[in-house]
Image 1: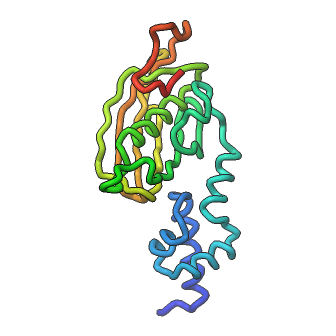
Image 2: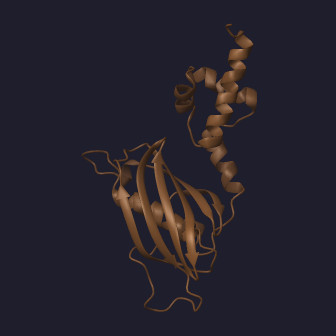
Amino acid sequence: MSRSPDQVIEKRLERLRAVLHQEPFLTDRELAARIGVSLPTVRLYRLRLGIPDVRERTRQLAERLVRPRSLYASEVVGEVVELELGRRGISLLRTTGEMAFARTGIVRGHYLFAQANSLAVALIDADWALTGSARVRFIRPVRVGEEVVCSARIQRSRGSTHLVVVDSRVRQAQVLRGLFVVAAPRDGPTEEAGDEDGSGR
């Protein structure tokens, strides 16, 4: 039995809600491709559901954000859009030409590392934290214009030392994964303390 036009639309609206729940940073063009409708149609669906565009969704998430303790928000590479201190967080990196190699348009790896590392440090519920070690694997290149969504979670903690798992993706494709050991000693920083890239303090 074929569906009526209204049933088809309702099914697409449910799909739109579900996709945005899993991936809130998708653009209208990406949503249209995911749902199988035109760009004007996905915009009409968003308006019908009262869902703002991607920039407004990002701003709204940022307004509800818990601020990091272990470093200043401005020291996190990318926009922190979700943060549960001591548990998990998400950041969004909008790549630009200044981040890339001129010849290839591929984003330099240290930007992806810095996004992952600074988010791992930002998770720590302490006045300061430093990266002790990192094991990172780059899965595929990121090109200028792509948006990197980085998710980090504390896998386990032992005293003041935390193992943080990081996963960075462009849409559904994984581009980086890493394990960071982040420490927040109770006696505070010393003159000798510091990590390689200074993303902790």
